[in-house]
Length: 549
Image (cartoon, rainbow, N blue to C red; front, side, top):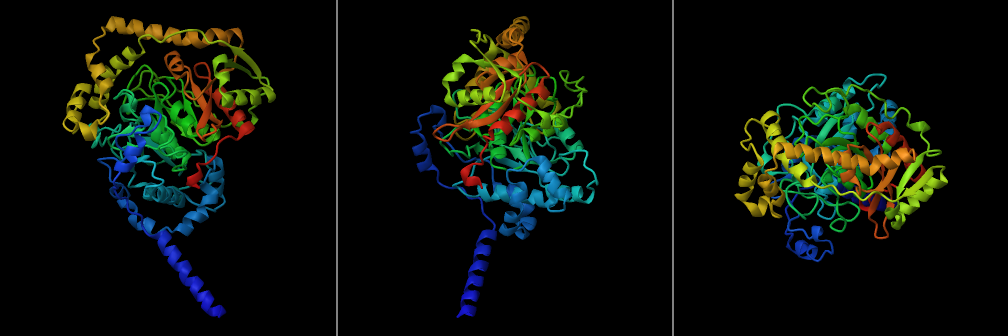
């Protein structure tokens, strides 16, 4: 009897393994009922017209990994979880150093995890646009050549990029059908720096198409190429934030060690706060923008998006460097070990400005109280009444000028579009699939005829207004940073060119994440990272999305 039960148990176990190990297939499904239900959402921007991509087939994206993943079982995945799931970069590298895992297994873990969740219609986040077909071979090379002592913490670790950042292994689409086959001949400068520091580029992430400067009032996280990005803390319930939607979602769901986003105004801060991850918008001039599809050469910057502050500091340091192709960063020679001083970070004695209107938010108020209890000096004040007149004009004229420069210098030679107007004509050939929410902002760009002299005055005045919003009070009260929440003051920080970092600070009663945002003066990234790290250790507010364990 015992032998019979043993063999029955063994057979059931083997059947279970076979089910778990079977290769998932990415299938299109009828989303009609889901769209009808979504039209009842209280938030207009969440009333989706489409969810799935009309142009992306993840079966094709995963085809290069079929052989390796067929040998990588669910048990292998489970065995690696304790070393990778919700672990920071130093912890992962320590496990590698001890011989518990290697870079090939780490890469396979993330590929398996992405496939596991993205192939299930109940958990798919539509975060992935492309994967590097060479990444497993590259991971093996990292294992083979691993130095005895790591000088670069990113060595051998997989990073995901927002799909407006050039990487030679995959097209750079900005989410647009017009750039569907934009296979570039060179990496963006920041990608080159990541590779120099040993990082593996795992793949490309969905985004709000054209960095959310295409349509007006449309869903964040939508692109024609990638479909509708969904928030892991509430799929189809909470917004993902934008425009680095896939970067926030993928970091939250542990699809890679870290992700990289870009921001013009709020595009890192918003999805980071909405997905309970750490997002840094650096000072314009710290990180290069060359090889990145632009909105505005005045305001654009890439930045790291990670689960933990220490990871953010490591990725930031890896991306810095002087780039002769970007006038804003041509002298950015400073090499700072941003992670090196974090262990001694403290809130005690820091002077933090609190914007009085935000205290009506209970999560923000609780965070401020915790900081006060930890020894911070809290100065509450009324923010100045300043409006950012001309902000849209700044974006219009910059994109009208900057996008053709990217298309001419950094895009695939086979890409025929050369301007915003060209892209509009391509989209109008099939507007239902390519621009279901319209292209009102592109229309505004084409129609904007602001003269050069007027444009320069607008830029100068906006910069002055941004500084006036922060600097007088920061000087008067000798503040180390101003405390905002989510991306509430991203526009002011953008035109002032002040850096910001948002850190998980809790969840609403409905379960929606929120972030505490520290705003500092130009090139105060080290101070902001220290403040963020101390707050993170004080509160430990980040939680893994429930269905993504």
